[in-house]
Structures are given as structure tokens and as C-alpha cells.
Length: 165
Length: 425
Image 1 (cartoon, rainbow over the protein chains, first blue to last red):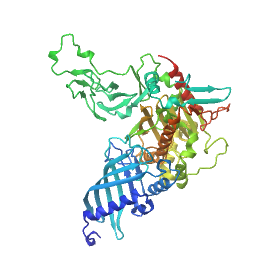
Image 2: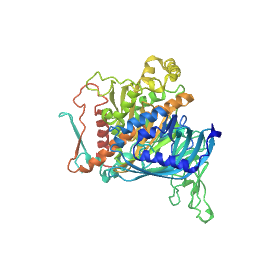
Image 3: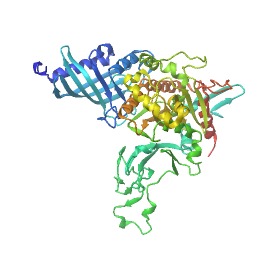
Image 4: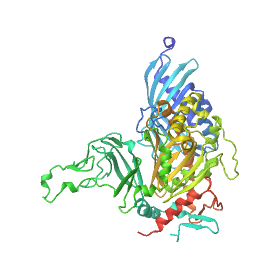
């Protein structure tokens, strides 16, 4: 399959990431969910062990596809107090790189800065790196694994990760 | 300052808390003296230090300490402060070291705290005795089954006596392990909450808040096939006969019949069909080792235990140790760990960690809403001078067993807190 696919450029990946960021920042989570593969995972490892495995190490988030679905139900529910009213999110993505490709899978990384504004609270800045495994499908790029690594030594004043980071 | 922070009128069945206790910097100063410098304070778990030389550095009761295992294998707690001019001698969060060197002038300490090298020591007078300049330790440092605590007061009662009946509840947690050894699992959750630390004590054991605060978690459990039937007893908000137990010295616990699944060992659909055989084995091992009654106690009850003042051991959806200390009157720093039996299989460990995240932690399906609740309280408390009392009388009229959704255990905490705060040192 990979032989028949045209070469993937950094611009293709950037277009995808910018589109994803736009959906997440605007809480269009039903549309975002369409970007996920049936076996997609969403992982936020602990700050002090970013390369660890969620089966042996306590993560902040380690969602399989079903858990992501439940997470979306939860955070769109007005009873999700941590996100109602929704925080305003704005993320800037840069330093996008294609690390490797194997068959229809593409390993990419990118740096992100995500600002979260909520009511009259302090601004929270989530700085870190995305490490994604994307899958090339006839419908376009789709997410197989979405690993989000936060640079802060501890969550500290960031508090919760109650939205999709 | 009010005459007393609490109004505890058993005749009128009224319990009120003065909100000044949750907002004032002066109260925090007094707490550091009367509570954090007087009570046993949790430092860490022995399993965090597997080999000689292992260390973690953290703040305990506001004090930077090194919690380490020395070359002889002895667990130690050292103040992370150079005896020379006061700099931290350990800047890393964790690792393995034989020596701690102060980066300022190069004084070097062994991991037993002894001062082993002073650069240019010929310039010191003969009266300078290096053996007197080891890293200091808290006045007392003791453990109960590898849960290590320090106390800054040399005259405090022993840890075992301080814990009292709470040890029985710690034993229940440890009984999950066939060898009686639980370990802290890698991956620490550390986060701040913009609220007074005592609100976390209340929240950790307050089962009254569950339906309102955690509606989305209950919904998630229902979506995952976990049956939550309506309560039979109209006084209960949850389908569990739960109670709240006063354990003395300000410690207390909830003690509930489990309804939401436990990694050891109560299967729920959330764990998946493939988990059933292994969970049946875990269950059988419990019964074999502990007998039916004790196995039921270990596997079919959930307990949220508070060791006064700031240690919480939750044994529910998973086991978590959580401690928190005040950074300001309206800000606390929380550290939380997952804990499991040392001999747990890879699949059971993965299930435990997954179950942990269904409820707990900054990305969990419940904790973020708890954090929100505490911060909403703290913001609301800005009106404390105009609306000074919090109402905490729930369940006071009850003469029999106290329910987990009553506020009896919260009152237990506040009574001890007020007693210590009103004692003038």
C-alpha cells in the first residue's frame, strides 16, 4: 500500500495538525472524533517519566478508543464541572517533523503551546511535545496514537488536564 | 479571630465551622506550629527506595527533605539543607547516590547524613568537629509497615500509638498482597489546587458530594455496564451501606460496601470479559489465605482513610496514597501515588492502573471535578466576613451508626483540628 501512496510532506502533516488543533480549540469534539482510528489511543505520561508504558506506570491519561468516547461524553456534559463553562483554548503548533514512516503509518512529532483561559482565573500554559502515530487512509490522515508530553516537571499550577490537550 | 473556630453543640445538634479557618494567613501560621510541627506527618513509602542509595527529595510539612536508603539499607529522612550555609544538597527529585554534595562550597555528605568531606578543612580551627555537622533529621522518624512518617516534636507519642485503630485499616489494604508487601508504582501525580488544604481532607471522605459533583463519573460507570441501583435506605445517596468511623487522634475512615469494582477482587464489566478468570484466581487466593470473612472485608469494601492531618489512603477503584501540604492559605500542593501488591501480574497491574484513571488524578473522570469544587468553595469564601459559618451538622441527629454520607467524620477532623489550634504552645 505504501508504494502506491504519494510522498507525504511536512505541509501535509502541518495541515492535519492545524486542523486538529482548530477542532479541539473550538470544542468540536464530534468532528475531532472522526479523525480517530478504531484502535486510537490518547496518552499523557507522567511528567517525570515521559517515555514510560501506561501498563506499568501511572499516567495522567491513558485512554483507549472507548475511553476517549466516554471522555468526550463526559466533557461535553454540563455536569463536567471542571469544564463547564468550557475553558477557552488556543494552541500554537510548530517544529513539525516526520520521524519515520512504515507501511501506512507515519510517526510525527511537533511542539505545542496551549493556553487555557477560564472565567476570571489565571492563565494556564501547557507547553510540550506531540508524538503521534498517524495512519494514511483513503479518507486522509487518521490518528492511531496520540501521545502528549508535558515539559513541566510536575503539573503544579496547571492543575487538571480536563480538556483534550 | 473568633473565640472558637467551631460551634459544636450536641444538645442543639448543631455543628458550625468558622470560615476564617479556611482563608486566613495567620491561621496557616498557627497550623504550621500547632499541627504540622506536632503531629506525625507522612514522608513516603519504603518501596520508593528499593536499593541502598535510592533517594527521593520532597517537601514534607513545608520542609525540604531527602527520603533515602543508606548504604546499610536503613531508611532515613534527612533535612535537605547544608549545615554550612544552608543550600539544598540534593536538587534532583529522585535517583541513586552514595553522597550528596552541596554545589555551593562542596561539602559532601554520605547517604546516612554524615559529613564526609569539607574542602580545605585545614583552614578550620581545631575545635571544628565534622562529626557534629551531619545533615539533621526530624526529631522522630518511624514507620508502620513501611509507611514512613516524621514528627518535629521529640515528645510526641510513638507512631503506632498515634495511628491507633487506623492501623487495622492500613492492614486491610496491605492484605491485598499475598506476601503482605505493597509497592508504590512509578508515575507520580503532582498538582496544585487553589484551595485551603483542609478542604481536601473533607473532600477525600465526603460521600455526600458524589451524586452532585461526580454525575459524569456515575454516568460513565453506567455507560460501562456497571450497575448502580437506587439506594434502599432513603438516607443513603449511593447504593451502598456505608458508614463513617472515628479512629481517634483526628483519624477517620469511610467503610462502604463496594459497588464499583475493585482490582482485588471484584469484577465489573469495565475490566472486560478476559479479566474474569484472573480475577477469580486473585479472589480464590484471598479466601485461601485469609478465610472467607476477611477476604470479603478486603475485596468487597471500599475505604477512604484519613490519617490526621494530611494523609489519605483510598482503597476503592484502585489504591491511592495522597498527601497534600499548604503552600498558602488558599493554595495546596497535592502528591498522589498508585499502590499495588509487589507480586501482581502484568495484566493485573495494567488493570489496576486503568481502574485508577477511571476516577482519580488530574486527567481522571472524577478528580478534576473535585478540584473544581474545592476551588469554587475557596472563591466563594471571599465572603467569609459577611457570611462566616459553614454548616456541618448532617447526620448529627442520628444516634446509631454514622453514615458515610453524613458529616460525622468531617466533624471528627475539625474537632481534633480545633483542639490542637486552641492549645497555646
